[in-house]
Amino acid sequence: MTRALRLGWLLALLMLLVPRLAAAEPQIQVGISENEVEVDDPVTVTMKVLFEGQVAPAQPTLKVPDGFSITRPSTFLSSFNLRINGRQQLRQSFTANWVIAPNREGTFTIPAPSVIVDGETVSASKGLRLKVVAKGTLPGNRNRRQGFGGMSSFFLGPRNRGFDIATLLDEDDRPLTLEGRELRMRRVPDPYVFIRIVPSQNKAYVGEQVTLAYYVYSRVRRGRGDYRNPPLNDFIRHDLPNPSRERELVLTQVGAQRFYANLTGQEAAFPLRTGKLSTGVLKGTFTIPKLGRRPVERESNDAIIEVIEPPTEGRPAGYRIGDVGRNLRLSAEVAPREITAGGTVSVQARLEGIGLLPTKLKLPERAGVEWYEPELKGELQRNRGQLGGWRTFGYAVRLDQPGPVDLGEITLPYWDPKAERYVVVRAKLGSVRVRPGKTPAPDASAGAAASGDESPFAKLGPPRAQLTAYDPAQETGFSPSLLWTLVLAPPFGVALIGGVWRGAHGLRRRRRERADAPEVLAREALAEASRTDDAKEAAAWCEKALHLAIQAGTGLKSRGVLLDDLSERLVGKGVKAETADEIVTILRQCGELRFAPADEADAAILQTTRKLVKALTP
Image (cartoon, rainbow, N blue to C red; front, side, top):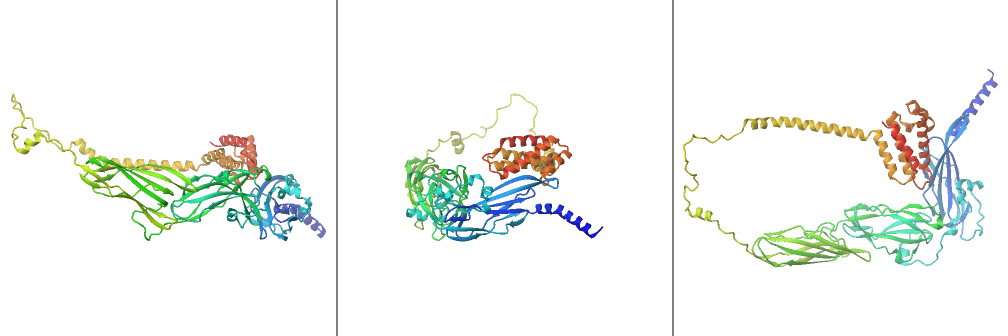
């Protein structure tokens, strides 16, 4: 073979291999919606990744210069087939969008966004340039230079053509009020709308009220939303009146932008233990007409409250951790004031004040005095954001010793967080006159026996009327049956208990094995898919149920098999061709739904998945 012929064969081989090698590397395209904007105008940065395989890229990241606000990325995944060298190969497209807003003038270089593909971080080779000019300096028609090389409609889609969100925002240049200045923030969590938990204090005592205010910050005046309050796992919670209907929106400043802060709710939270306690996040779904009809979801900050105990120095006897309040008042009434020994009196104690009122009082201890559990009644009152009210304690007190009995006083030691000191409130009960009880009438026979007049023959039986044989009394002791029962019962009992224990242990083991069986896990995944209303979550549960059902019915672990090869593998395991094709179709639809926006779960996918799981599981 000549040298020229060998070179020709080598070039032909390279031409066959180059397309496949090039396709194996992910291809990244980045762009920006506009190259020149005014200060505070939003700009969209988009990254598109073309790749092979079924594992979606993760952790899209975009770093912006100082002074820029940025939203969380919105992602979208789609797939398509390409024919390369006569063979169809699966390709997928991953898109991530960020909305950024500059707050100062200048020409900036935005680093290229990055993403993790198959465990490796990849990014574009060049960054993006953005020129920011002062407000009002661009022409009124906003004829700006488009990014993406004039292909912004390809990256952003038809919904963004000619759409300028900055013209829809409400502008308000009024000076900030005192409350508006208190609600200012340096960092912009979202350029358009976000929610925030504002605690009345970041440090509190166990049992002290912390008022949590829930605010919605928005660039526009009008909008509506649905909210899910934070869990507050380590707090006792009580709702407070919502003054939002009685007040105007508060104009405040976040970063360099003006926002409207709307107080949507308040709660009184009482910490139950010490430590740095987390309130959890407040979740909300908003519909703001000026920003589009599609609802947006937001999560608030997680407020951390540092909770401590009151000081041990000067702590009065009987104080219980958590008894905290202000201006507590204690009074008591006793009735009746005269009883017979062994009777009871009623003690009605009333506690009033501000705070989460305690449920126990410190009772006096006296000999011959017994206090029964109280009957509690009360009412919560909310005044200017403070929780308080009253609580009554109804005691029944038994008195056994005759004579005047001083009941002493009821006390309640508590910690006043405002005054930073312990306070003890008291209620004196006074005395009760106890009369002696009645003496029971003496027994005549007992008196005769005591006097010694009883006849020694009084307890003898009557004389016999005729002679009979002597009948001795039966012997007392263990009978043979009882004796053998006592001897044999312990070993038989040990054997019986051992058999029951081994049977129960085997039953628990079989239950654990049954709970981990793929067919059981598949049915549990179907139940989770039926309970959720989120389309992505339902698709994920349906996909998991199908993979588990395939493993239970055929022994094939299908998660490691490409969808294009799965149908053939299932037929080889004895699954009907129609059922195998239907399984692949449902898995493909579930994969698309997990990364595509949807308003609600697809009932047809869930119903088909349920049918396939039933057909696959034994």
